[in-house]
Image (cartoon, rainbow, N blue to C red; front, side, top):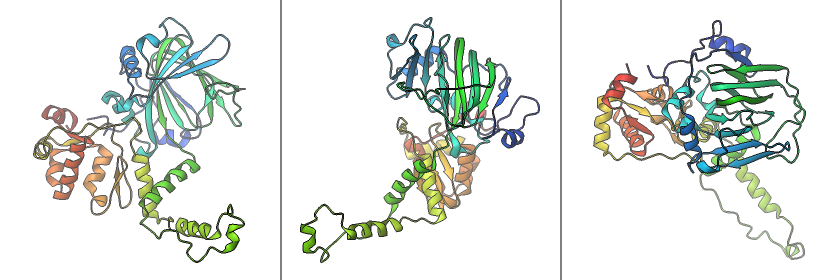
Length: 392
C-alpha cells in the first residue's frame, strides 16, 4: 500500500498516535529513538546540492564565522560557490523538497495523522562539521529526523525571546538549554512551538525538518480579507454628488466623512457565513506556493479518460486538496455543489488516489473534472505497473 494512504506508525514501543497527540503535540518535546529504523536519506548529497542550484527551488547557505557573526546567502547557487566539504561551520538548506521528489512526498504522508491543513513542507539540510543555524525558536511544530551522520540538539523552553542584534538570522540572545540529545540516523525529535533549539553537526550530516504551519491570526485575517473582497459581488461605486460644499475648498486635505461611511458599509458586506468563511480559508490553504508550477498533460482528453478508466489516477505530489462542509478545494480553487459535496472527490482528497473501479462509479460530472485536473497536471492517470503496485 502507498505511504499516501497508510497511517503513520511509530516503531518506538509504547508510543501510539493517541498518546503522542494527548501528551506531546503542542505541549512538550519528544525524542523518538529509531522512529524510522535504519532510515537512509532519500536524496544523496549530490542530488540535494543540485536542487540548490535550481532557480525554481528555495535554498539558503548559512555560515558561522570565526568573528561570531553569521552569514546568510540565498540561492540559487553554482556548485563552485558552495564552500569546500571539509570546511567546517556551514549549512545548506533546501526548502519544499516534498514538492520535488516522490519519495520525500511519501515521507511527509506518514505524518497525515495531523490534518493536511497544518502540513507545510519538508526542508532538508546538509551541514559540514560544526554546521548549524544557531540557537533559535520557531512558531510552528517540527519533527527533526536525522538522515545521515550525527547532530547534537540542545533544547529548552523560551518564554520571552530576545534576539541578537545585527545578525541576518533571528538568533536567541540568551538561550539556556535544559536538555541535550545526540541524534543518529533514524532518530527523530519533535518540538512544539516556543521551544528553543540549537543543532550542531558532529561531522558531516543531513537532517530532515518536517514542519507544520501555524500562522498567527493577523496573518490569516489579512489574507482572508483579501480573498473575501475578491469574491465580493460588484457593489455601488463611490459618489459624493451633492455632498461637497464650499468648506472643502478651505480644508482640501481633510478625509471626507462620506468616503469613510462608504468604505465602512462596503466592509460590512464582507462578513461571511460559516460555509463561505471555511471555503475561503480552504482556498487560501490550498494555494500553491510561489515556486510551484504544474506541467500540463500532452495527452488528449479521450486518452486521459481511457487511462483513468483502465488504471485509476493519483494527485500530483504538488497538489494541495482539502474539503469543507459544502466545498472541495484544490490548488486555490473551489468546487461548489454538487461537486463540492462529492464523496468521491473527498475520498480522493483523503487517499490522494482513485482506483479504476472508483472511476467506473463516478458520475459524468465527476469524471469531467478529474480529466480536467489531469489535463492541468494536478493529477495523473496510473500506468498499469503503477496501479498494480500502488492500489493493491
